[in-house]
Image (tube, rainbow, N blue to C red; front, side, top):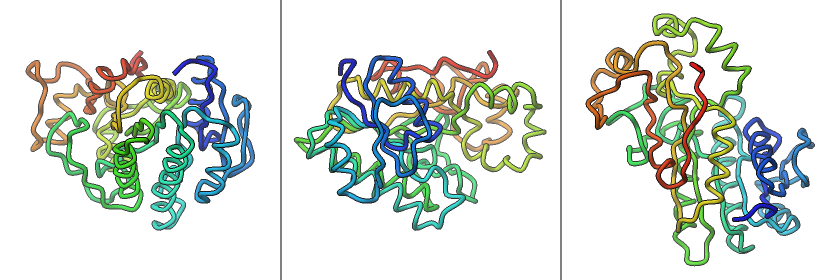
Length: 297
């Protein structure tokens, strides 16, 4: 895919959407923001108010902006402010409408926001169930809550569309909490990141369930762009994460303390630093992407 082609970004008003729009603009793409609410960014070349739960509006907006590719982010961002059925519907039906429209409008490539929750982590009140660490795309999924179930179902939907002979190339991206420089400075650099302190914090269950992982917005936006630019057939899922954890403790000690019964699969004999518990090898090998930003820098 060459620059000055048009990329429609659903949910371009949100944090990740604004980052993706900026990344695409910086690399010469024409962009159109498709969002349900009033425009809240000034980066996109175009804007179309679109209810992504309305199939006709999705078709109409994508046809009107003549999109060559789509980044689909326009979903309920977390389950905390909506009933479960609303969250599930947002994840699943908006993705179905976007993918169906893209197939019939001959859109070349679609990148869809899944979540680390598809693993069965994140918002579930029970501890995450792990077969091995670090997790990769082959790790079994165990979603239970409405948000996680919706993210897993959208991945299965994307896989099905990717199997169609005349369907677009489809990527689904799993990622943990998305941060920027300000968040890193306030939450990580200028605070106590010892495991003892984190265990006393109200967010301990959530960060343990998401493997103390994070990703910088700029790195995630670059991965969405790479998904649109790289040729592969059908559907692929990719993990995204920063190269390290959010804890001062070395990763080997963190695993021993928090996940002592989980099988560790590290080829070189074990962890030797603060390595992430999310394996992003697939994104590096297939897309040429690596996270470049760490809070320890």
